[in-house]
Length: 249
Image (cartoon, helix red, strand yellow):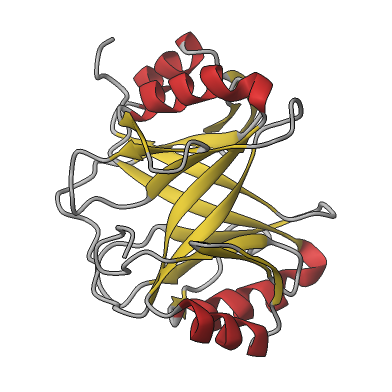
């Protein structure tokens, strides 16, 4: 397949119910230690969390919906080619917002085709304690093969089996690249594909305590990660990965 339309950069969007907007923005700014940009959009429904160094990749959006979710924006220089690429791979158009095509993967996960050139390196890992650096796409068993193939092809990244059989990572050819993408095989046989954000943290136990002090709830503790729930309901994970490299410690 041609490389036309392959994303140059990815943005992770946390989509928040409007009544919990201020709470969510405050929580993630405190959790990451990043500054909040001025709001934008016709209803001031978008903000960016600005890292200490490097280009931004984490954003929040207020929604008139009851449950939080996440989606990813795929920046490409040629948006028409990007849309053609994803459509040929099985994506379906959902709607258009302000000229931006909003799509669904074959399994139903929302993503957007946005414009961006990309430069190397754009991502600067410089915070040794913590960083929100990964989207984990949660895939029911009946959707697994199709969804892994789709995300590998649409991103131009190579799938790589991890030590755990239920996880496949999509390898960024740039070792200093931006948002990491992990695919998780769920026990559920059916359902829509969903996703959650992951943080790489240097000290998971103390980081868990810090997040609890910010209002988060611990949902479950596993060998390599802890599942958390933000005060407004967003599920996310603290993982035993080096914040400076993104790799498992």
